[in-house]
Length: 342
Ligand SMILES: [Zn+2]
Image 1 (cartoon, rainbow, N blue to C red):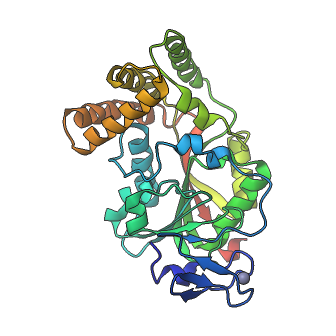
Image 2 (image 1 turned 90 degrees about the horizontal axis):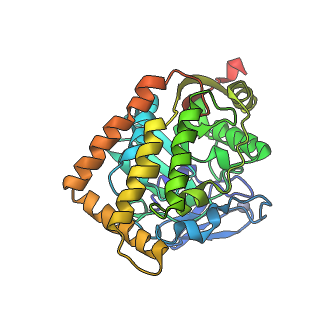
């Protein structure tokens, strides 16, 4: 949606001045560029096309996600969302920006906190609920079309690993600019250097690939999702440096080595959807159909939902058992250093 309050934070991507609302969008009072209401969101992408664009623009990844509705958080996404809530402590009155919001589902999952949300992404694959209930923008994370210090909290999930080192610095600097002093940015991403525990994940994934060769599971979507990872952060010392250079301190961190998670998501779930997929010539389409079907069943909160919830509970062991053991993937809260400390 495009609410009245969106116009208090939205800025022209070229001139950084506030926009003047118009019947079907907005206009920049300085450069006169008009921005049309593209059915529920404002397109504030800069005119100058950036060289580097993530393959997330690739429709292939989103072909079955278009106009999707938001299901309940489960498995890895429930763990991520619970960590987000624990790290950010969202409360009524919080002004939060979701940097790289995708479908906008994380905002929907947290609307019960009473915080207000603005989502921004480079491509418009917003879910119906997000279009109805959250302020949404199309824009470039390296040049946020948002006012200075407009938010006190932010998050960015599964985004940083898609950026180059330069884009990451630009993105974090922009995140810092739009946050108030002491504002918090929650991130979920990974560094290139893994700890010894990652061997467990590698063994599970090797097993998964073996099962794929036998035709028992299909990992194509997972591969596509990882195909454009640039992994700009070398290790956890590098994370501290990169964050500091953009005006942040790493305030709190929990490592996430999903050994049980990889087994649950890459093997058990993939086998289950194979069983549910009808036999056909186009296995890809059959699996997509099975996923959509499973999603509908999950929303009805029947036995499949509770079985998946139970598996999600088991996956928590990955956080409880080795959340303190330094490894590649992690959850962290970055705090914007107040002016007097900069
Ligand atoms: Zn302008």
